[in-house]
Image 1 (cartoon, rainbow, N blue to C red):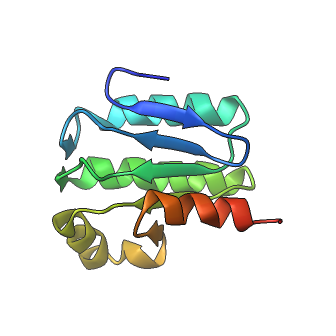
Image 2: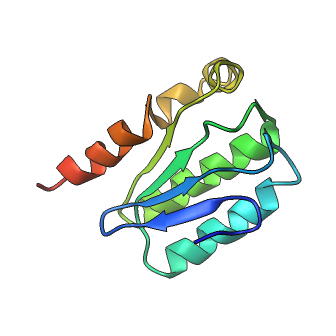
Length: 120
């Protein structure tokens, strides 16, 4: 499913958000992401993968959106995985010490496999 800023692929064990159009995860994109995540959670989605391969910049509002998505997934018995991090975004997450909070995978395939192996 295409949205204004990214695509959503729903599978049985996870939902993937990918092909982000803006390259900045900032105060322009964050409210839209927050709204879509809340909608997905209301629909019963528990596990979400953020493929951030097109994101080249992330500010505090982007990190806040990821933290909120992580909390919503966890509160609903699921997990959030972020993957394909640009070196600058990875550095921001590391400097913010959020690497201990987020489940980070190198690739989308690795993230998908995490959910496919879960409860197998």
